[in-house]
Image 1 (spheres, rainbow, N blue to C red):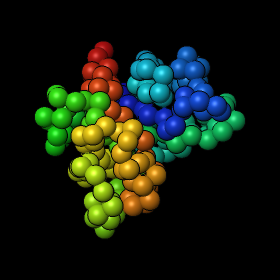
Image 2 (cartoon, helix red, strand yellow; image 1 turned 90 degrees about the vertical axis):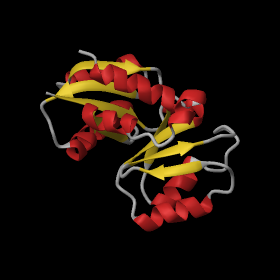
Image 3 (cartoon, helix red, strand yellow; image 1 turned 90 degrees about the horizontal axis):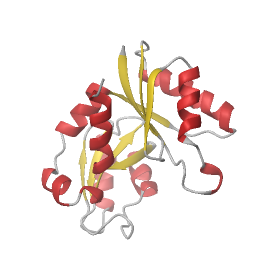
Image 4 (cartoon, rainbow, N blue to C red; image 1 turned 30 degrees about the vertical axis):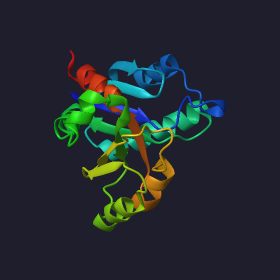
Length: 181
């Protein structure tokens, strides 16, 4: 069976974005996934399945969640092996240790074209640093995320794909959960 790390975009931010993690685990279990676990209240799940087509699986989960919750949310899946590669490929090891809450991994729906990465680099007005990683990006926010002008909307505008981000603490905890029996 393949172990997947799943990230839901923009849940539990207030208002109509509320998704209870026990409801999410129940839905995924009823869909036939095994060993469903969640982390935090921000739409992070780990599960096992025999299905191997990640994009088709994402769509199937998105469709089911839309049916259950009455609104669409993007789902981003990576195998446990791919998630481990994200962790091992971190170009900011100092930041991961010194300020893990100021380092994020943005998981993307598609790999942006090279000009998208260049456009994003040119749009940075602060001290933030971005490193491309295919269908993900590492972003260091030395002055914190809250005051940064490098927002999710700006990132998506230049990369021309949707994404969701998790700070390094969450990335590491998801790696540990996805490798646990």
